[in-house]
Image (cartoon, rainbow, N blue to C red; front, top):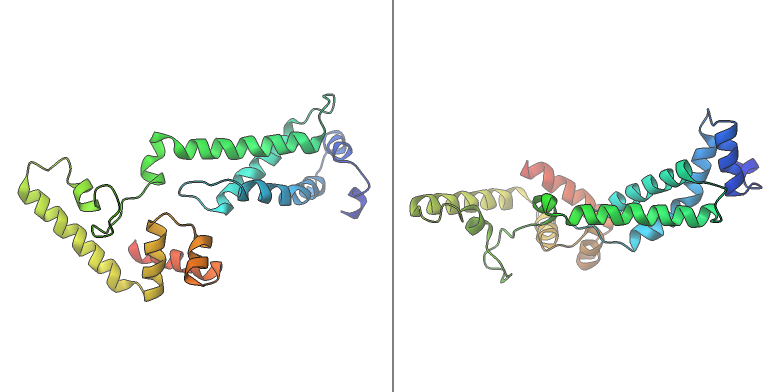
Length: 198
């Protein structure tokens, strides 16, 4: 890897394409070199229903595309081309997350009816189509309440607090800051919550 430090990015890509990269060292070197740029770009973007790690992964895909598609005969340096490809990939990920076809994945409905949030409660949403049937409405509300009661019993105090914040739209870093916990503890709590709810 040290032998690559004396070469420009453009020279590395020429070598990658000309001589090949059977052991993957050139590709790994470029990906490692540009990972801080990917992180910086990913931290400046918000993905509804996603984590920063998801955005970093998207950014790395953009970087890979930049390595694949870079044309040294153009006037742009590899750095600027890579920056553009990373930004485009992140933008496309955010755009895709905002499309209506992903609405169930990108939005939530509060389990709480008493939170004062605008919009219908989960029970009201689940029964909107069956509003004409009072019996079904009562059954659905009871099912939702039973589900929520079961979830509450299975979660620890920390897990309930984390879930409340998560359902309010906070990511794990924001939750960690608010609860005064390390981000890893919040991430672990979210994983336990998902397992328990399943």
